[in-house]
Image (cartoon, rainbow, N blue to C red):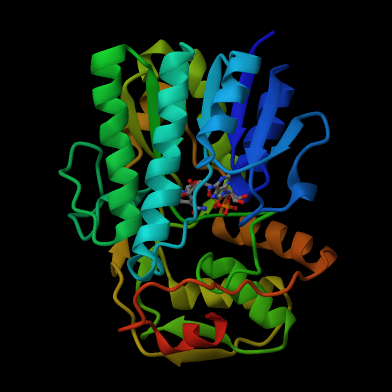
Length: 334
Ligand SMILES: NC(=O)c1ccc[n+]([C@@H]2O[C@H](COP(=O)([O-])OP(=O)(O)OC[C@H]3O[C@@H](n4cnc5c(N)ncnc54)[C@H](O)[C@@H]3O)[C@@H](O)[C@H]2O)c1
């Protein structure tokens, strides 16, 4: 039976990847330290291991025990805006943790390593972003993702480890963490509405993103290992139509049946417009952008109404406080 490792299995996208893998009949071992996910997200037909990808002895023992055919590596702390203020944490978790998995995948002759990078690698680039552009990441999160991409490339050249890299963007949907004030704009908006507070928008809200429903993305991630043409390739993946954050706020308020209430905060340092071209993933992996923003947001809103709100996440070890957006200071504990 095909055996797979899914890191970040208790997180948002990782838990959907687990479901897809199980639906294919794979045996699934999921690894997650629950720093950003919840055990209840993990399908009970998978074997859940609570642990840190930085624990290389644990990683090695899992590979030794299971001899995985494929690895889907999704574990990361994906707080792009915060990453500049937690550089060491970001590189440890998102880069060194990935290297531990790559080492083990080489040693145990894994057949393919699937990595979720991000369009954060492009930085402010021409639009739409295409895979052949020279990446120019503008924050530590994007640099860590690009480093892992490059590490996979040189590891393949040296040791033959096959890989597929995805650069998703602004993915949302059922099981997204809505308790982390540092990331996931749709989750932040929904939580604010549920707590009867205005939605907080950085700057004028005219920055644009193409918000992507998770249902469109994870089946392609999972099936990529079956297509040899995908190996050693990098794919943008996600919705094609960009919306402004102001338009998004309107959709979220409407989906939760509330009046639009927005509080504008000082602009932060971020890429203003980001959307990508998906011709390559459509051609090679049959990707289709099927879920409209309205439909996807309504689906997530229905789910959000049914869940118990978890405490808001705080962050203990900020490494640089200079230029930290003031709104985040309330969530920093020392
Ligand atoms: N959601 C998006 O819009 C988006 C866009 C581009 C890329 N990505 C990437 O996709 C992946 C999944 O993102 P998500 O939105 O599902 O985030 P998520 O936070 O919901 O899931 C990540 C999971 O990784 C776990 N994790 C983090 N550090 C870990 C560690 N050191 N050891 C073990 N587990 C650890 C967390 O507990 C969490 O459950 C990430 O790699 C992220 O960078 C996400």
